[in-house]
Length: 260
Image (cartoon, rainbow, N blue to C red; front, side):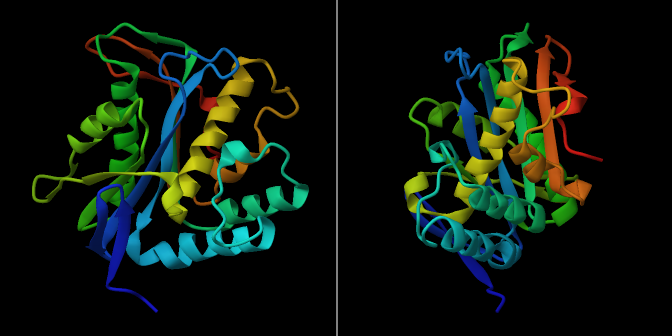
């Protein structure tokens, strides 16, 4: 059954939007000052799709996957909590990300990142993530856009302000996003999926920086499952290497991105 409206849960309550709305979930990984030497990365990323496709392509498959492999559809699932996942659990996650046609995106930076501008890294990554969202909007042609950001005590004001200031569209149609904060405890499937997307990107960059990737296997299984999609339009990934005043941030490395 196709619903005409969908309800989004956020920290201030709930809101309803039409099926033609682009729903975006954003989460973070790491620290913007690279404070953790064992995790010297920072990134923003998540997932997106039109609300009319949410039940079929994300919510129901995700809940079914949790029911089969993690003890129940209502289990609160965090990527960072999976210390020793079984092969069966990894295969279940892999099948979900490979098989479901929703958009996934991430922008990463490592401790080697050079910032010669006055802009903080959070702002630069926010701008890059918004470019991903704008590109996704070209594919989906939404009438509205709702962005839900995982609530972070450290970054909530900064990231909320940067994302809320953007628009998508062209000269004839401009869409200003509605931006909300939400905690993972709300158990919304798209926010749990956003968490797994950005954690896979963070682990890929972290392992590369720390020299834990081999020449034989330069890409982690979870990163490959999330970003090496058959439909190239579904995966949007880049890593910022350098930002200079008056210039666009330099992206890279190509070896870390999704397959063509």
